[in-house]
Amino acid sequence: MMRKKEIGEVAKIRDIMHQAGLKATASRLAMIRLLRKTKSPMSNAQITKRIVPHGFHQSTVPRLLARLVHAGLVRQLNDEDHAKLFQWNGPSIGHVLAERNGVAIADVA
Image (cartoon, rainbow, N blue to C red):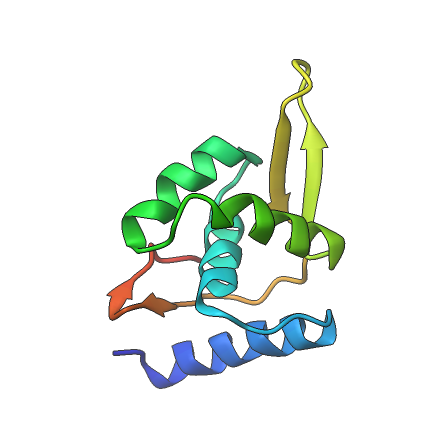
């Protein structure tokens, strides 16, 4: 169960997503939380490895990333091997907690 503070922070993320023209789905919230948590950009494979165990299908990861990149909330980079890497590009929000089917996704600070 989410605490009052966490509910407020999820509401902030939802507002950011709505301002970017996106619906605030559980999968998008989880993706944003994951990318905000990481200190360095992540590859599609790294993101998939972290998201799938929490009930998300691996085929949704590229679509989620494409939509978040298009909305400007995620930045796509290329490393020296021309692999695509992704990182949070939105505003700083603070601590966030989201759930998927009652399972908390890793804590984000």
